[in-house]
Image (cartoon, rainbow, N blue to C red; front, side, top):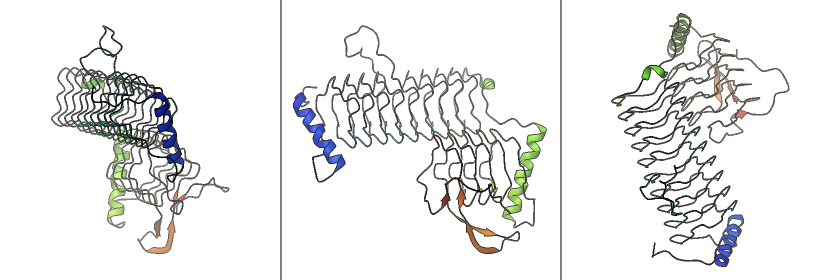
Length: 404
């Protein structure tokens, strides 16, 4: 690293102070550019460093616990053995960075770019220890929609991490610890998961096409709706994982009614029948691309269900449980979700707006109904910005309305 720039402690503190002034008021201070700077072992705990430039910087052993690096650019930086525990790293750029032995426990890395980052190298720790590099630790990190394409995360610890919708195409996750991780709708095309621990993970709707899972452990993994075309499963006991939702006689009948409702909507009522399935259990059901507009589905348990691309326009879903369900791209225009549990559900790209009210024969009545999210649990829900003109969010003073 002979080409790196050196900076005194006083100059660094002044640079960060000017950066914070600039963050608060762009007419004051100056944005910091610490690219190609030697910041070995520096202490940045709880610092406000949003949008800072640190391209190619040496941050080996630096302490960034609790720091806010939202939107920062660390392209090509050497982060070996750095501490990002609990840091804010939303949309931070780690492209081609060295992230071996980094501690990302509990970090918020939603939308971060770790493309071609190196999480494991053959050298020993920078401290001079004779032991091998300690594992990259991403336990319980929030990696929603992170881009980790072609990253080397072999042997990384990702236990309990949330990788919903993440791009892991051709990523090396061999020997990684993914026990209890969430991989809903993640792209794992061509990824290496050889000898990875996927026990109790949730990979519903994930695309594992062309991936290798030789000798991977999948006990208790929920892989309902996952795509496993051309996937190498040598030495894997897939019987110990859930690939399809249970289909007992009752659930078969429920699915039949849902299909009939789809026909009823698409044919304007000339075929099929309207679904009225209040209080049923549809946990982990595959309901993708169905048209359930106008259906009565109050108090239904949809935990872990797949609704990707489905239509739920003006559906009555009052008090239903959607915990961990996937509603990516689902049309919820005018739907009643009053009192629903949407905790940890994925509503990425869902359509949430008013819908014109129609009569039974399809005639418009000239009024619209907003999507009702009153008294709804949105804890850790993946959802975009909500337009207050399109939704009802305040607590109702009267009993929950019901659809006609």
